[in-house]
Structure formats: structure tokens, C-alpha cells
Length: 348
Image (cartoon, rainbow, N blue to C red; front, side):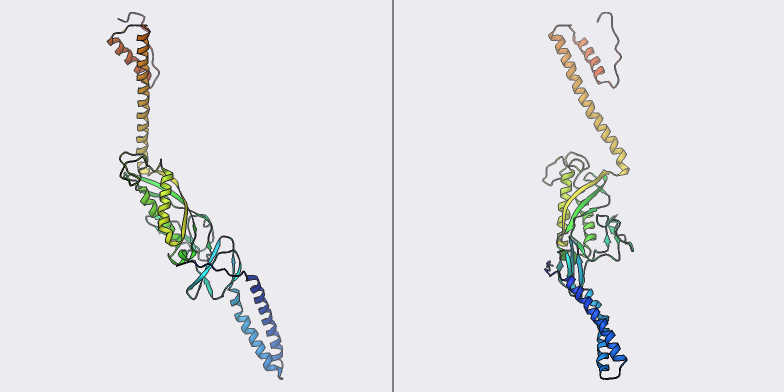
């Protein structure tokens, strides 16, 4: 379905004034016809009755002209159909008059997702929409407007529990900024473009997250080039978000939607393994710290022995060097301050 932009004249105000004038004329015809046709029996009676009837008919059917008046604000569009046939889309703001038998079409008019422009709007019945295994938290406003918003919207998708490439369950949420670019595709190619977008966001999120580990892991290929890399959800959030955006865009192209940006808003291990993973991270941090301490202590001991030998401060045999090394490592690597014992006697 190709979008057709209607370049109509903004003749809403002249038609409004004309319709009001017709109504006033019809009221006057009813009054004059009633006076001349109902109260007289002369030659003016048939003419008065005809005028009276015409005035009543115009008053009864004149409201149809008001149905053709359409008001569009900036960044709004109206998809018009005539007896089921798509005739075009109004996109420029203004006051229009169109064929009163044209009807505006927007299947997603009453669908309210957790996104900007929908939060806290309207009243009426609520319809919860399920998206995969998660709820899309959508509601249905029965009296929604048929206009299509062309503004940039932000869809805050619900958190999902997904297994990463290592099988660890994680919770992740994304925010997607999007807008409608082709109103004809949005209305006619899919049943409800808002629900369609929410479902595709869930699907794309699962497809991409399954390629990455939560944190950097060995022998994991996240790019698909056959070589292990250091990609991860926590360390490569910008790259992951861009891949999610492209994945969603490829799915919603047929619906006339543009995905401007996608951002990860929440990322954490699932509660059932969060405590264990925290202990694992703590153990890894402790091991790394210990390695650094030992490397520094060995260097300091080596420097001390070299300087003592170079300046001939004291001559130590291998056994005494080993004892000195042991004592220095205990002092430098210990978790607590050492309590020195002064030996006032001979080394031997």
C-alpha cells in the first residue's frame, strides 16, 4: 500500500460559515413556509407548504456537512477512506473540509501502551494485551481519536527474563524511540501497529540478548565472525542497543514505522542467581587483588635483596635469605598489620 498525500485547500472555515448560513436559511424557510402555507388557504399555500418541507429536509440532513470538517494539529495525520477505498492522507496542520462520507481510519486509536503520549490518557474500558510471556501493559480507550500522531514516541517495554548465551537468567528492559513515517502502511499492512511494535520489541530483545553473556566470558562469539571476542551485555551496552534497534527496524519496516533509537534501561541477574553471581564477582575481585599484591611484594623483596647485596650491608646465606623473603612476604601480603619481634642477639 502506497501512501498518498492529499494537498487539499484549507477550506474548513468557509464551509463552516456556508453550512451555518444554509441552516439559518432553512430555519427561515420553515418559519416563512409555515406562516404562508399552514395559516392561509389562498394561492400562497402550496408554495408555503413546499418551502416548509424543503426547510425541514435541509435542517434534518444539513448536519451531514458538518461531518466533513476536520482539524489537524502539527505532527498529526488523518487517513481517509471512502466506502472502503483508501483515498489519501492529510498531514499538514489546518482546518479542512472533506467529503462528509469519508471516514477516518486508525485501528490503533484506542490502544494505550506504556509510552509517552499514552500514559494517563483517556477513560473507558481497559484491555490488557499479552506479548509473548510478558504483558505489554496496554489498555483500550473506546473513544480514542482517529488521528495518527507523527511525533517521536518512547515505548518503555516491560522487563523480561531472558537467558544469556551461557544460560544465565537475566532481567532486561529497553526503551525504544519511534515514529510513524508511512501512515498507509501503518493502517493497512498490520492489524494494530502499536501492538505489532510492542511484540516485535519483545522478539528482537530476546534474539539479541541470547547472543551475549552478561559479563565478559571466554570462547564466546557475539559478532558471528567465528572468533571469540569480549562482547557482553554489561560492557557493550551501546553495541547491543544498536543491534536491537536494527533488529526491530527490520521487523517493523512493513508497518511504516521508524525506530530512531533503542536504549537498555535495566540490566541485572535474575533474583534466583543474583546472590551467587555476586559471590562469584567478589571472589574474582579478591583473586585479582591478591595477584596484584603478590606481584608487588615479590618485586619489593627482590629489590631489597639486590640493594642489600649491592651495598654490602649484610652477607646472608641461602637459608637466611629464604627466612627474610618469608618474613617480608608475610608482612607485605598479610591482611593485618604485622607485629614485629626485635631480636637483640646473634642472627646465628
